[in-house]
Length: 194
Image (cartoon, rainbow, N blue to C red; front, side, top):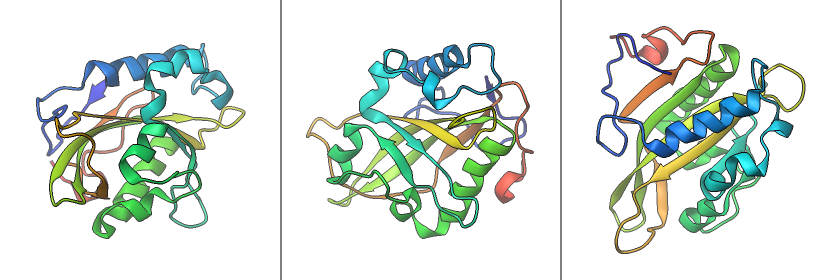
């Protein structure tokens, strides 16, 4: 469920004001994988549940000893944008350094609450252009019941000219916490007061 009490941000999907059908379907696949548990385990995230999202799907395992968001599993669609396999790479190296700490803290909040996060985020391309990405982020557990990884689906409107090389992920223009049963962080999370 999309939650944004007092959020300073409107809620677009590709600038439209709503989550995309794919984002909602991704959350439904996550919900089905829960199978009565608080958080699904990584093992429960079966290919049949996420097949339609696989190219733009990733699993990230945040570091708790230092801010890091290394990719553990990465769909081939990320290679199309970045021109390299991102497995093992720290996501924070791909973002504007000015937002790296907020990005990390947001992921940790998703694990600690637990909750999900939906956002619309611009990316700067190698040719000097920009494109909008829609992120849907949900917590999972490697094993057991403690969330320690996130699964991410990234959706975007591909330009007519083909996929541009992405140079840097920028600050979200819109974001909302997803309440999965345990509430969401306070509206002033990350210094964004209502």
